[in-house]
Image 1 (spheres, rainbow, N blue to C red):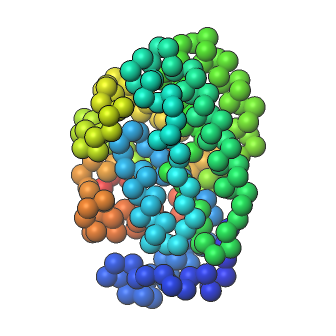
Image 2: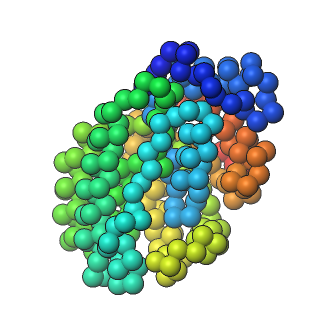
Image 3: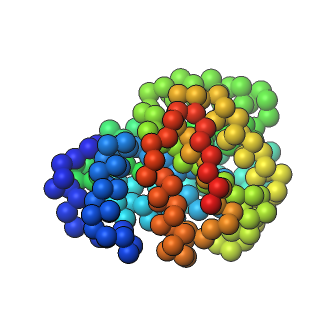
Amino acid sequence: MIIGISGLSGLGSYGSVPETTFFLLMITVLMNYNYIVIEGNIGAGKTSLAKKISKQFNAKLILERFADNPFLPKFYNDPERYSLPLELSFLAERYNQLKKELSDRDLFKVFTIADYYFVKSLIFAGATLPNDEYSLYRQIYEIIYGTLPKPDLFVYLHLTPENLLQNIRIRGREYEKNISMEYLQKIQAGYFDYFKQQPGIRFLVIDTNNIDFINISGHFKKLIEVIFEKKYRKGINRVIL
């Protein structure tokens, strides 16, 4: 989704950074990335970061549509009963959304950024489904996974389960109130296992336990520099902020 320099018109300056520095940063983005994924556990701030980056860099934004899923509140109240219909519904929704959004190019956007990647379906299913149902689910997943584009950069925001629970409590979603530490640990382990199995993707794991990029502009600037000012090798790259 690379566009001409004219597509950069109207962009604001990068905080207090001079316009020349901001312009050079934009050129780096254009050269390295067409499709970036911001991922993380529940409560990691991935949607907030994706929105801020989209606004800062005039990027096409893809947000996961989960609030209207009728199975989600039921799942948190009765996981054993509703885990399979929940995961199947998310699988279908995520596939349909990404297939459409990633094929519909917007020539007036610099790149595409999403607050989830399709593999999220497999990771969450692995944490919720019993072995027999997960085996069936994985077969369905593998059939369609290969038809979707891979991201140029997969950014994973890492927070401890304790900090995740604190963020979950702060945002106050009723259906998330029963999320347990054990469940978050399972999700985290699922992501890390996936990273090890995919050497062909650039993973950038950023420890954000000590920053508040949502409310502190300097922390957001530091995070942007880590993501965009370096060309990362394929495999796992780790940064602590």
